[in-house]
Length: 369
Image (cartoon, rainbow, N blue to C red; front, side, top):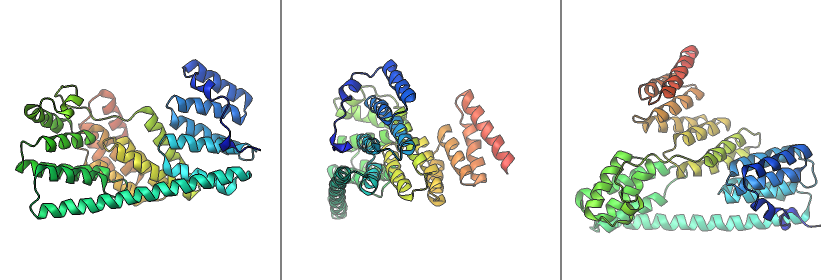
């Protein structure tokens, strides 16, 4: 008998061609009416094809609970692995493979899962080797600066390496450090195009629109055909803070839910993947909020407080960051800090809804203190 991993779903081409909302509704209705795991897997596959991987993983997670005693549960679990891999959720993918290797009643499924785990281990080892190489290069370049190699190209290389090297989940601090290096270098080499281009890229990551605007203006004066200037279509305007998409938010929310499960390995895997997502979107305060809630679910209040402090320290005049910091401090039972940030959220409110939200939060906090 074939394992679920070795069977190519016969409906794959059908799903690929059925990507409109009506077709998704039809597949959902079929799953709800039949109640069969195959129908739910078809619906999840269609969601994933539409880029709704967060929702697809949630559907499959519910199936794995409801059909825990099903003989074809491996189909569901292997599909979770495929979608997790497509979404870049390496730790969650590893967790699911370990569950298949340990609990599957199908010998081929267990062997296939073991094989994939070995491949994943080799990939992790290669990633760790690359990280160590970057650390050595960073040490070499830093030492070179102390011995007089202070040209703009050396500073630019140092900034790039600083973005690669660091602890997991600390990309925002690494970008901030790289900006500090580049700003210091520009005092010595104010007309360096490479330094300005690197600075613009770092500022874009953190959503510092005003400083990015000033950097692009200077860069356009020195080199109008700069690739960085062209990337912004030649428009030297403040760049809005990058916003996460709906699917990224759904994936992050799904991972937070996994941290509330009794399985500590599942929670650890979810937090590891969520930390990576946060590093990819350092300016998205809602992701720091979700990561804080994930740490709380896992019983790690100190790490949750660290996310709250990070939000508060980088909030500036942002209503959103102050509001999310207030929510997280409240969840950590730090009501004084929560009130302070809620007041700042109200002060920096932009829209009427912002003000209503902040006022409601302040009222709730007043009732709790």
